[in-house]
Amino acid sequence: MKTLIAALILITAAWGEQNAPLGQQKMCMEQVNKLVEARQEFRAQMNANPNIITFSYTDTNHFNPRARICYWTTRTQVQTPDRLRLLGISITDAFQGDTAAEFEPAADGREAFCFVEALRCHSEKEFLTLAFRMRYRK
Image (tube, rainbow, N blue to C red; front, side):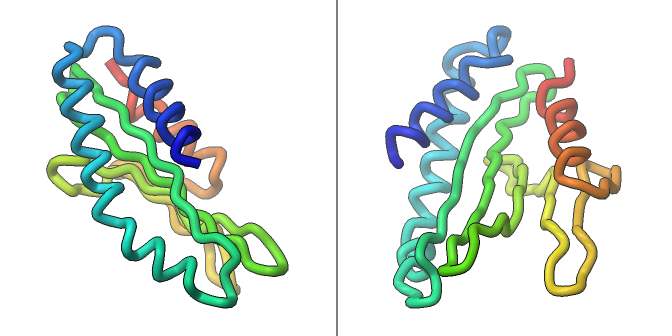
């Protein structure tokens, strides 16, 4: 699992960041790693729940050199005995802590919650399209 996360981080760092100085990319990756590490205790608590088989995060980072923002993307899922469920996707400024985008699928009778910056969205596909444009805009 750690290898997969490390590979995702490296791929994300390399893809689309050719114009960002290596020092800024490294600083972004280190900040996201600190945030991920700080969350380990909560993950352990969730995985200790007997109704949860696996509670997992997939974390990636992307430094946008034009906007000078280090984006931290987190995809949160939970595996219960009957299904794997996406809990949400969030994109946060890793240094400022501001949430730039968030998606929570429809569940238990409530509508999906979805926004990218000031734009509302209505599906995971729309969220991913808008989030990609936000993170990689020039």
